[in-house]
Structures are given as C-alpha cells and as structure tokens.
Amino acid sequence: MSETAPAAPGLLTHAAVMTGRSLRISRRNLDAVLTAMTLPVMMMLVFVYFFGGAIETGTAYDSYVMYVVPGVLLLCVGFGSANTAMAVSEDMKGGVIDRFRTLDVGGTPVLAGHVLASTVRNLVSTTLVFGVALAIGFRPAATPGGWFALAGVLLAYVVALSWFAAALGLLARSPEAAGGFTFFMSFLPYPSSAFVPVDSMPGWLHGFADHQPVTPAIESLRGLLLDRPVGGAPWIALAWAAGILAVAIGLSGVLFRLRTR
Image (cartoon, rainbow, N blue to C red):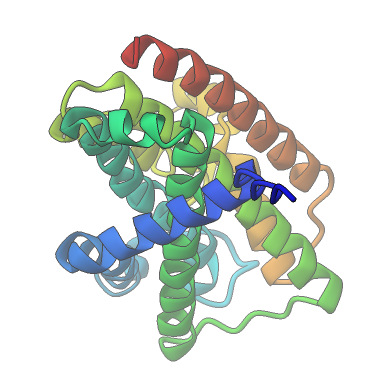
C-alpha cells in the first residue's frame, strides 16, 4: 500500500515560521530593538519634565503627563516600524528571498512574519511606555469597555503602520534608505494633537493636523484612557487604519513581484 504524502504547510504555518524567524533576528539586534523601545520613553520624559511646565493644554487636564501619554503611545508605533522596514529591505538585499521561494514560501508569509514580529515588539514597547507613565504620575480612568476599545484602536494602527513599513522596505534599495523612509511615519505625531492642542498651532496648519491619520487615533486614546467623550473619533481612526492597511497590502504585493522577477 502506498503511503499518503504529508500535506504541504499552509499559509498560516509559513507565516508563523517567518514570525519566529523575525523575532530571533530581533534578539540578535538588541541594540536597534532597545533603541526603538527606549526612545519613546525618553521623548515622554523630555516633554513632561523639560517642556511640560511651559505648555498650556487647557484646564481639562490636571497635568501635562495626562495629556501627552496617548501621543507617545502612537509615537512608539512609528519608531518601531523603522525596524520592520529595514528588516524587509535587508531580506531583499541579502538574497534570502530566493531561498524561501525554492521552499515554496511566498511573499505574503514573509511579510506577514515581519509584521507580526513588529506587532509583538510594539506591544512590548507600549507596555514599557505605559509603565513609565504610571510611575511619573499618569492615572488612567478608562472603563472596561474603554480599555477594550483602546486596545482595538492601538492594535489596528500597529498592524497597519507595520505593514506600510514593510512596503517601504520593499521600495527602498538599502536598509538605510528604508529607515529614512519611515521618518515620515515617525514625524506624523508632531503636527497633530499629540503634544499640544491643534488650536495652538498656526492657522494654516489646522487643516492638516485635524485631518491626518494620527490625530483621530490620539484623540480616541486620550478620551478612552481618561473616560471622556470621544464622539466618532474611534471610528474615524479605524477607517484610517483600514485604509492604510489595504493600501499597504496591495502595494507590498506589487512591489514584491517587481523585486523578485
């Protein structure tokens, strides 16, 4: 009797293996990982202790740390995405993709592995930032439902921006260029309501600050963390995240095929 050949590994199995590979690579590049994790903490400490006393956010907030923490949480995502872009670019440059293709591993599992590993790293970084925020006086008042909604919005942005960073890694011709491309994602929290109210900015900047992807996410996180009305901000934030994710997946598919012809 002939034995039945074992089934070939599926897409999810390949993605899980690639995620483990990306996490092991992260362990070998601890300097870059630690920089991405500690830089947002340092930024938060700088804004709270150096600039916080001079920044007026309105009477609704007891202290500046209560205002700034949600913005720093989004800042973590931008810093963490740089590692994803550089890791994808390194794969494309090093020729390992050709080896994966001989093993019948397609582009989607490889990129999904980088994105899932980035999600894990970002969650660790976010936890670190939140822990330091609690130590310096941040006191959230979120309800159980608020915590659930907050986690959904934050996770949506982590996945969307990580996948977009993977697409940038495919677009760049070197890891250094990939890191440079992600600067624009890291910059987005600054012209938003992350560190100062939009109303305090020059009038010509209001339109961009109010209608860019990061602002509704920050307003959602701030309102949910402090148990204040958020209106439609979470839905707008999720719509932005869904749009970014859709564009990133489509773009990465096209770029991967072009790079591996």
